[in-house]
Length: 265
Image (cartoon, rainbow, N blue to C red; front, top):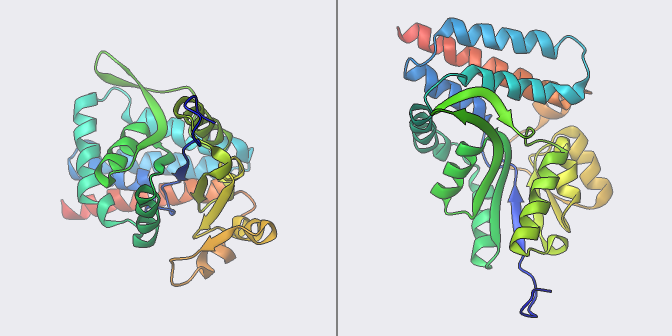
């Protein structure tokens, strides 16, 4: 109960990549950087190759997404914050808003109409999460925070990557600060990596789920929402290491963006 004696408010928490957004946020950011000549295709290919080499090396999978995020932050290290914020805003407006799953967006707006808060919770940069939430009229966004000194990104993150258990801890902090009742709140994700967040609320929904999350959702009786015309590509290619799939997809996307830029030149 709140201090006023009324019932606590509730909220809905949405993962972004493949849940709200078709595709990977980092891929679209790479496209934005390449289109503005802020990176060379050689830099992107080299970055993508390093990720692919690491992700196929058989190292501990719990470190995979941290590696992806750390190297992504290093990729923007030394860049002017205002320039990068301008790129992020353009990517959100020109690309991401056209890549949303309409069904997920309708669900988010339905929560708002019921007076609930709606938060985006993503491993993507915090600035992007906030911009996307603002454009959609949502309550706010929670993402991975990049360190800035003297107006430039250092290439390091503040705190931890917004992934796995970190997502659950983030929504628990928000709930405490804003007096939200998580037992009556809802979380949405496509990935089994987000089990901590999904388990932290009273209502969990699997959206376009990977194979592991689909099986878990069926066992637990969670609602499953599917917007893709076919899920065969994902269920048949769901690896033992789901983070590897995330990183490999980002690497492939970055390479594609770089090659596209090279052809335009």
